Image (cartoon, rainbow, N blue to C red; front, side, top):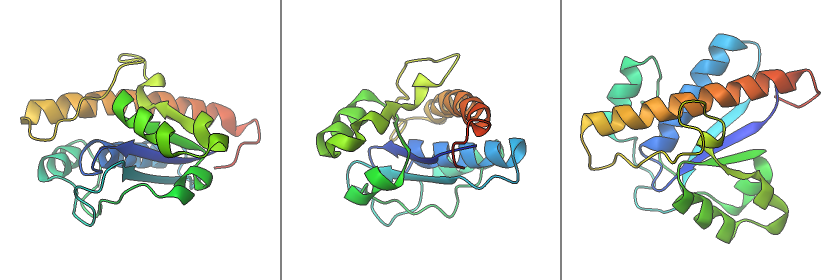
Length: 163
């Protein structure tokens, strides 16, 4: 299995921490000996240093994902070289990342749901300020993208990609 994966949303308190938690749990279940680097960041500094949003934490916990210890951070220039994949939640985040990424790293930036089956190519809507059902929908979409991503990573393991 390969790759260091960075999930990115706007403020790093809802969608990207949930994606980080989902992929960690999926990897632990499917390939427990593997230790990929999985992290998340935001394109903006609105909530740097703060924990994940309480609704995101509680919903993730109900589905078996632990994001309680998450601390929001903003993406930094070194992230583009450190991570093999930089997966954004929506096209706004993709555009923001492309604007600041070094040219050599732009090919690493994609939508998370490029890997989804049910929600392929869609954007994960920002649930911040919404109701519980908005967080549930976002997490449904994130799970879909992470499951597709895991399938790719497991398949890539035999091709010499690092994990």
